[in-house]
Amino acid sequence: MGASTRSGAVIQGLKPPVVRLDRAMHAQTAAPDPIAEIAASPAGPDVGAFFDLDGTLVDGFTATAHAADRIRRRQARIGEVLGVVEASVRYRLGRMQFERLLTRAAGYLRGESLAELDELGERLFIERIAARVFPYMHEIVQAHQQRGHTVVLSSSALTIHAEPVARFTGIDHVLCNHFELDEAGRLTGRIAKPVIWGRNKSSAVQAFCETNDVALQRSYFYADGDEDAALMALVGNPRPVNPRPGLATMAAENGWPVLRVEGSGDRRRVSLRRLIGYD
Image (cartoon, rainbow, N blue to C red; front, side):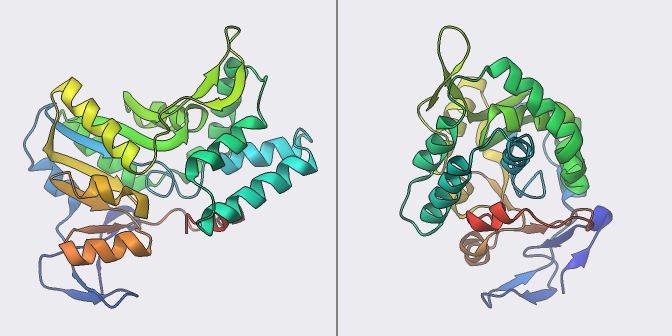
């Protein structure tokens, strides 16, 4: 079995030779304590540490807090709820691109003030999300910060979901999706291009590294999604976290250390996360 460490983390990788078989029947072995590994790594801002958001830093899907709040406040009509569910199912079945799914959701917020949504995002973070930040992943963020590494939150989430988490964890750099705005600062119902997801996220991280003199081959990337495989293959230190099946298989084939972390254990996952394929 994998080795247990602080804050409910279980780490699997190549050394030492303690073998575990995952569901795909790929052999994985216990990896060193990642906190100690980071503490012994080269210091300085030329080493990057890139973190995905949903399922990596936070247990669950952050956008569901906003969706649930709209439903509780009766701001979401039945057509909106059914539309998002229908689009989510089509996305999971491979019949809709992520960009269209995100645009569909943004369309329901057309005409709203970004400033007000930012305030709402901060409130919902305090009320609903803060308790879902993985404690061990927060420790890993702090370990990189203590080494002077350039720490970046790189996510396909929107600013209203990503930025509160970045502030809470002390992450200064955020690469994520943005609402398109009109001159009055209100949402047009569209997402600014290019939409950050999959290979576009990989391109955004590479551009960030070039602009900020960060060495990608010396950097770390923590993520859970199959769509993050492209960037995992580019960084020097790929670190899948609670990986979904495709990424778990790729990790086993490439010998990447796998982090398995647990939350508080006192909450049930929001069904929409499972619905759109985040589980």
